[in-house]
Image 1: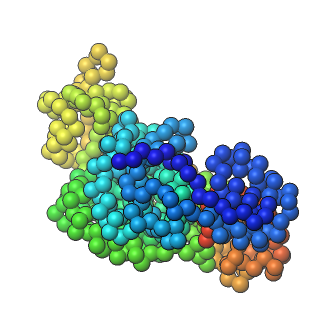
Image 2: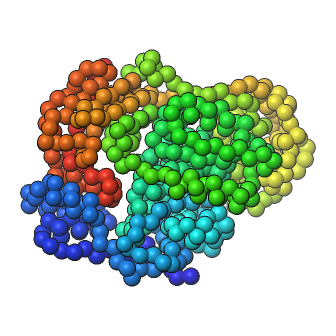
Image 3: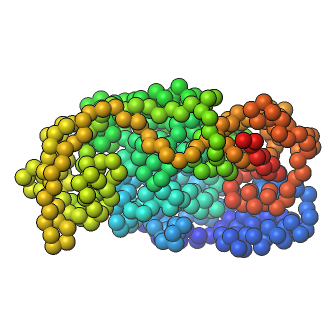
Length: 513
């Protein structure tokens, strides 16, 4: 196998004039400061914004002499740390063709250290043969504790692998997918909510939507209307049984999300069903094409975020009448102590890396770094022992726990909570909902709890030679021609690096309270 630095080569650019040269250099720039300098030089030349948009839409002239097959790559995360990644490029790759891209996120992502190239080899089971057969580019990135898929660092690693891959290879921007098993499945749900813009679809396998909130994201289901989902759950999954997913899937569908859900009987937390499921997934993927300029987009959440041509910049003042909060009640799940375990700890016992709020462990004062060594008088050798012991308990049962904290042995006594339906997702942060629909240069916005947002205006959805009208909850808040913004055009085109999604102007809107 060849080891290839992720920036081994960049695509070449045909040079016709200074504008074309600068656009090419902007697309090639990897350092933000260099990119900013090039954008300033482009703006200083005062070229026709439509010509600049045309050049960004043309993109790179991709080279034919590039590595193919299985490649060992590295990617630098937003935390400055390098992590390994495997990349498969079809042997018959040609730059004239645009290739689908699939990122496959592994399970057990809280491990430390991250998987190296050799460790990632086991992940080929999931999609390697399929990628070769169906002629698409496959990336298998590595995550770890502190870079879980539902964090900014972990999800950023996935997006960085995509960005670096399409610097060198002709990726079809409208056929980009994310998948994964277990933690990787939960990460797929997270990407659909936190970073929906690049994706044509996500394929979560034995993941759970609620895990997407582990990194601080509040889960709001209306966001799934932006990205089609093909999800698989199994009835006997010890972590995320299908019974706990069904109310969430039902709620997603009722909110208008395009969800295909497969409930597979008589399987646990085990991906061995996948060979039989791949043909149906492949058929689903073949049907998916992202619309880079959808006429309607929906965003819901706390803080802010972007969906294609809409970016929410501030939330506040929610009333909840038009968009009531949807938070399904889940049936009581499995018995849990409420800790995250260090998968790399060799025992005896299991080491706690995180204590979850509102769970028995938190009530008992369990701390990060504690080693759980005994349960109800039995020795805990490893995580499998503990899981078996917990399966023998039911809601309301008392239990005894022995732990090692440094040199001290501590005995604890607790009780599991009574069985009761629970909200699927935690709440606490101010959040908002917005639905925007564009037609004939009129944007009709329904918003609740949204303080400010921006519209990214580009063809074919908007004609900037004519006035743009924006209505928020029935009131006209803007009416007039929006001037083209060359600096914004170049900065956003370079950030998105998407030939099918070029914006000529940005229109900020403040919502009256």
